[in-house]
Every structure is written in structure tokens, then in C-alpha cells.
Length: 259
Image 1: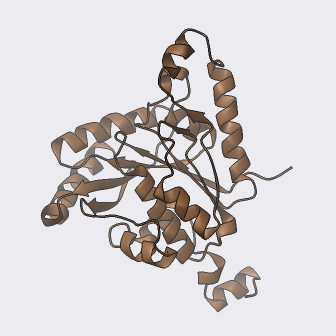
Image 2: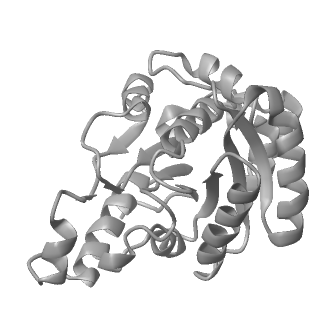
């Protein structure tokens, strides 16, 4: 029987369009550049409202990273049908979604799970992002709104919901900040969020002009994304070391590895 992945990383956001998939693409590029082989990684967006191909799935295909189509598509009228008892119940829906995540994560080191909407999205059918993350003991990254007051208020609300599922340590990425104010706003956000969410860690801040093209190489993705979210910071927060190809020869010798 295939083994489960060593680490699941669930990216959630303040809302639809928060930048979750872009962050996922950036993280995958970083991991490849940090020495992880494509065969060690996997990506899935288990629930979605959009059936268009996203840049991150195109990137996965180009880089031969295993990925899966969504287990559940929220088509128009689906939630009404659920309430009317015309769809599988919560238990069956969750089982289907968990199975698809398990399948893509078989024998992988890191599985990146791309959330839908905010952390509570899916609650209406009994399958929220937070509940799925809890099922896999996933590390969670939350992509916040831009701004200051509203961003902090919403982040506290959303992270508190994640915490209520027994997930304490949440990594925070502040997204879509104005280019001319990113350093100051990040400083204010980091200072206040440290007081309000002491178990969470600000991993980086991204400007509103940041984009990742699906045609970029893994190294180019890494270079652009690492400007905002440092690879070493992310790896340390996840409790990971660089992939084998990035280990020094002395370290490899200590671990009994040859390359």
C-alpha cells in the first residue's frame, strides 16, 4: 500500500482571488530550486468553483509534478442541491475529497493543497478547508488581504477559525501591498499580528505588481518569489532541509547519501 506524504502544506486565503494559487506556484518553484525532485512533490486543489486551467497546474505539467483535478466542483446550484438531499452527504463528500488528496500524496515528500475561498468555505457541506487541513495534520499558510486595519481584523478572524480546528501554528503571507509602502505596512502588520496571533509567523509580504507567468522556469519562479518570501524562512518554518541535491557533500556523507 502506498505511503502517505511526509508533509502536507495547505494554502488558504482571506477570500477568492487572494492569491493562493500564485503563492502555491511560487512555493513549488522554490522547492524545485531548493533541490526537491518533481517526483517528490505533488499539488492539488481539492475543491474549486473554477474549471479553467490555472497557471499553477500548467506549471506542474511542465515540471512533471504530479497533480490532480478537483474532487469537488461547486457548480451553480450545488449547495441548494446538497441542502435538498440531492447530492452525496457530508460524510461521503469528505471521504471522496480525502481519498483524492491521499492518492496524489502517495509516496511524496511534500503535497501542496490549494484552498478554495476562505478557511470556512465548504462548511455548508460539512467540508471546510480547515477540516481538510486537520485531517492531514497539514501545515497551513494563510494569504491575507492587503491593507492594515481590515487586513489584521480579517486575518485574526480567519486564523482563529483555523485554530479552532486544532491547528495552532499558521504561516502568514501578506499579499497585494502597494509597492511604495510595502516595508512600512509589513512592519506594522508583523508587529500587531505578533501580539494578536502569537503562535503564527509572518513569512513574507508580496507587492501588488507581483505576477508569475506559467511559462517561467522553476529557477525564474524561485528568483521572483524569493524576493518576497525567503526560501530559508519558509523551509525553517516547515521544519525542512533543502532537497538532496542542495545538501553539501559533508552533510550528505553524515546522512549516508551519495550524489
